Image 1 (tube, rainbow, N blue to C red):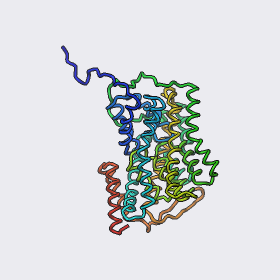
Image 2 (cartoon, rainbow, N blue to C red):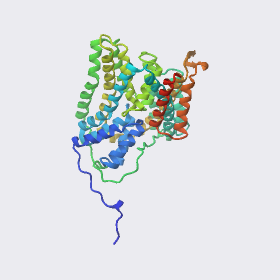
Image 3 (cartoon, rainbow, N blue to C red):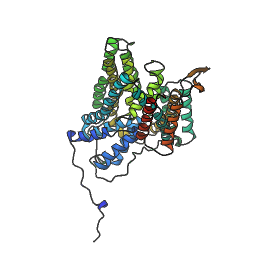
Image 4 (cartoon, helix red, strand yellow):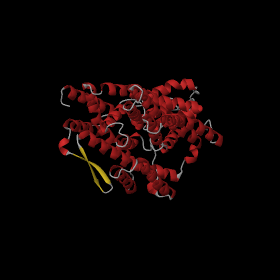
Length: 462
């Protein structure tokens, strides 16, 4: 008689999970969601697919590919999607909301510390060190995404054109996304091989079933006009009614109105993840609205890198500073808190709208050549946008003086070489060597640079 190996024995299907029973699992996923979308997706794969067997490998990757098509943070939307598959809109709201909560609380606390004690020696040194480390991490993101997206000269050309457009010509990020999407859609529809989207791995091993949500399981809600209209009305109102109320009550020139409108627009064009959209935020929040300084954008990104939750939570810090510095009749800290919460609201409410409206139709998107082409072209353009972010941060971190220059339509900040900050340069180089040569993880690099910055500050060198 042949003895079956343990790996080939039939496994009992997981027991159905109630909404309340899923709560501690989603809390665990949220608490472990460090390291940007790649790390967050890997954590979800390990917990949901490998450990709990809530969702099959194919269903997980299918959901991830759909979320990648959407504007907004794909990891948070993936959590919302899986929660929706399991328990409908209530499950999606629980999973997606908990994914945001730790970052919201952490960034809010750090924002208070920043405005109250940011000029104090140790705190200022900590953020000085974080800025240098963030440069290396953003450069790593450029290379990581570039290896996946730039398959051939066409995609390299799209990335180069996107970089030139945003860095030298000040073309708005939404227009770059739109143009890349149109080019990719046309190329994909024509069946050109250059515009075929690649797969999105989760970073985990393939896991055998059975699963609570196997490949053949149908979603709780089917695509129907009534459901779609209901979700559009409910979540459209949750997102936009507060924005309209603020505009009517305070007028379009008020900082809360500007924050609500700007980040609502941002939520519709944030393809490519947090690093890509930060170029758009920096372009507008720093240069147009003057809500904060370039170095403060790096401080905010350092906060988001070292706390759980989506990296796009850095926008909460931007909204906090915008309202804190123009509080009107409110106490500055209260205004800043409300500004940060408003930013988070209009950033993430659309994410639930996209999932609850689009998820029932997701099967119709499988294998859609035009959409696959649009995705691959947008991803390639995003590489150029993130490269712009890395260069922009480097100029404003490593040099104390920049002179604006213009030649025809070209706009450029030229660094004054004599104004280079030697300590910032040394820390940035050390972080880059640690990341690329010795493969040191993000959290240790951030921690080491932060400690070095505190040491330099206490020694009176910065």
